[in-house]
Amino acid sequence: MIRSRLSSVIERRLLVNYRVDPRVATALLPAPLRPQLVRGQAVAGICLLRIGGVRPGWAPAVTGLTSENAAHRISVEWDGPTGVERGVYIPRRDTASRVNAFAGGRIYPGEHGRADFAVREEAGAVRVAFATRDGAVEVDATVEDAGELRGSELFADLAEASEFFRLGSRGLSPTTGGERLDVLELSTDAWKVTAGRSRHVRSTFFEDPDRFPPGSAVLDSALVMRNVAADWSPGEPLRVGPGAVPGYGSAAA
Image 1 (cartoon, rainbow, N blue to C red):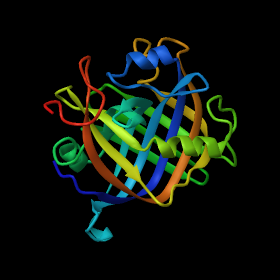
Image 2 (cartoon, rainbow, N blue to C red):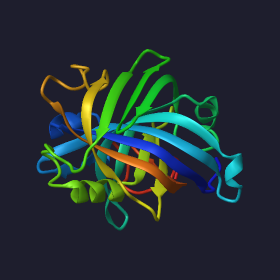
Image 3 (cartoon, rainbow, N blue to C red):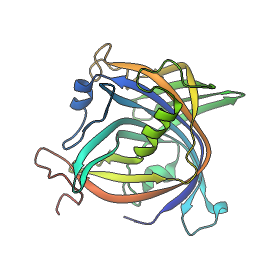
């Protein structure tokens, strides 16, 4: 697997956030991960990402690819070699790109499923809907721009929400073998999010009563990121499972 950095531009990123019963979130996580709590609640959500100019760090921007992508996420922490570490557990990634679906987990960390996307952008709002080709997940979300973050029970204001997600920039996603998590980290010198307001959100992932019993996952807030240059760097896989020793390395290490 290639370990070089990828460069890109985050053309549009919607973070649709839920507050979740910590016991329910815990049941969805492999050891040694645990939910990162905010005001006594776990934080989960959907990242709807249009990313452009994706290319190796040494390649010119004109050679980059553009794609629509989605990730369901749970904010997590775990005990690493030097203390508590944090990131997001991504039980599934989906993409409209055949290239991403082929490369994910083979050439670069992060296995992807295929999905069909419909996007409509208008002044002050964006709608992103997708359905996975395996029939497992459907999402339809419309998020409006907002001057400030209101109504959230997780975050006091936009600054607090922004810092929370900035620090949780490491994505950990399961692999087919199930013994490790692929690790991919976002870095940028231009981090900036703005407040959003959810006009309509539907997600069969969060509405599945077997996964989230009624009332255990409640829509909380939305954030928007636009036109931010960002790099993506692979990390060492994280071992998982009942016998996993906290720390990095392959399952055979």
